Image 1: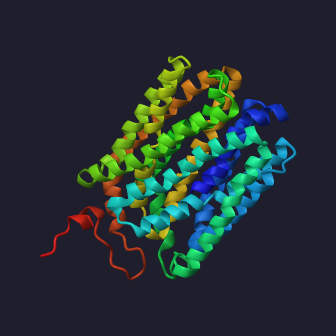
Image 2: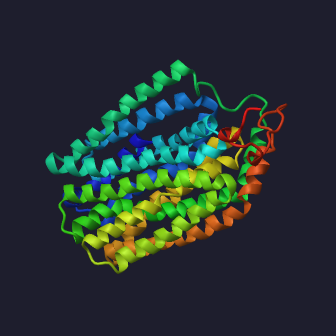
Length: 416
């Protein structure tokens, strides 16, 4: 996840350089981020379905090689149109990576720890975002933007070799997830009708709209409003994203602990975090003046805006059968990418061209209010949908398992 988001986000630090070289508008700059997410949204569910049949480990290796090859090719792009096409290919290759990886992790860890584990996994993506912004700014300032793309691509090929070695050695994920005779279509129909899944996906998409807009345009805002150069703006923005990493992990732990006694809190706490994001971000860009206080408020916003990631992904996994868990998380990825990562940078760019960047970043966080409302509604049906999924056998002839609530965590069990 780290490498995937590094390759996605490195272009953000290069906005000032690309804008000057190709005379691009803010909408065109935002499209270099959004096109990746649009392709992920379009291909996430089909990609997850194919990975369930081909084998997760093999699918992951193929994805990593393809998107890093496309990122490397971006270094040689000679025009805006070529760059958009190559960035689209990055999105196609990354489409199912997060969903398949998260499904494998959800299968390896018990439900009461999933918020923490998936929070750590998704936080790795935020580390990639932060490093992409930082490294991109530093390399572009010292060398050029082409070198920044090449530097982002090379570690990915080492990751592909590592995944190939681990998969062949452990045999994990080598075969298809869907067994012969499995009532897979029935699980898929049941999944699509699950109310909690729909609400969580929509809420996650709206919250990520705010996160993506802020993450994509914060370096440009610091460059324009705070008078920082490209390298310093990238470094300052990356610190906000690092705080977001800590928030994603920390809030995942909090939701797992409090949700053990009151499961609905796994979804209600993200609702509170989304509301806090809207309040902090709106005040930061609408009322605070550029300076130390405004930057401190950006950091505070970073601490809460990503806290929903692990708990919501865990809740999505909880309401899905193992046979379609990667597909369930792919639906979340579709909403994340279509509503969040694609719409956020583009919407902020449109508002910036029409008004100004500060106003755009003050208006976009209204999406987090919608996210908070959707999470509150999802909390009402989460426990019943989770228990219903646990009572349905995964495979033909298999006995149903008891709901997760009936299985105490391993740490609570005592030997007789």
